[in-house]
Length: 374
Image 1 (spheres, rainbow, N blue to C red):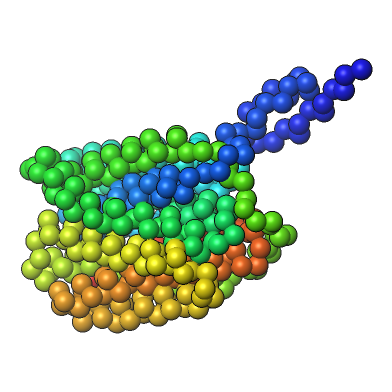
Image 2 (cartoon, rainbow, N blue to C red):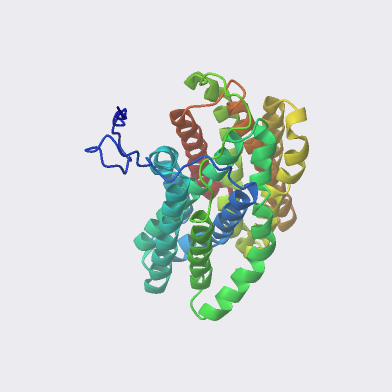
């Protein structure tokens, strides 16, 4: 007699017919084949390209469209708020529908956000620009889970995180040239080309997302899930770095313009900052496991603190040095904090969402502080 398989227990996100217990339909697009680290790094690189041009354009857009000067950093803060709001759905949709669907959804939101930002700039609508920035930030929140995908599939989370984040270097080198070309095409509309480039970058990220392999087979034997308390210190230390970095980054474009730097040249300064954000990930991908993650995170946060101090002097030279230091410190602290989270064992999806949400909360606070530093 043939044994009839029991029906799987239905849950949110399961695309399966539960009426026929003899059929085993997959719950999502995940599977046993290992994911390519190169694919994760490439998808992250396109997302970082969008982040690069948006981070340079949003403070300038805010200054041009804000009804009051103190609201100039609101679009940049809205981008970070969107990233924070996306942390929980980005974490749980991955289990419900699979990584391809999750990352593709995030990229799609980024395309819509870039298009809305274009409309806001053309129509000179501050509210539209803030909403477009919010959606671009939500896409950014999804893209930061590329590093968790790599860390979860490896017994060397620091090295895996560094390898994925190193893909951001591509965006740093390509960003200024592409942004300048896009601005020429969109002339005489200022920043419209940059916003369109952000939408195009997320379109490329969408193309990478739909080709990703299914869930990786872990290369190490996982321990019991780490308690939620294990993320407290990594989130606080990493969050301090995110706060300082975004305080400098959100105020730097306006400060540079105030020092006589042309608006188009600001993209070059931000690209230098982005290069510093992801350059340390290259050596950390090679030697990250040889240093305790807590020490890595603390060292990165110390570099950010030094950069914030330099930024307070408000000259083109000190602002440039501050952008480099806070970028490098942010990268080191983020790699260290991510590896620190995995130190006590594989974190739960709720823990990952709380960790990234906490980091983006600190980033929002830093962005709002940027007006005081500008």
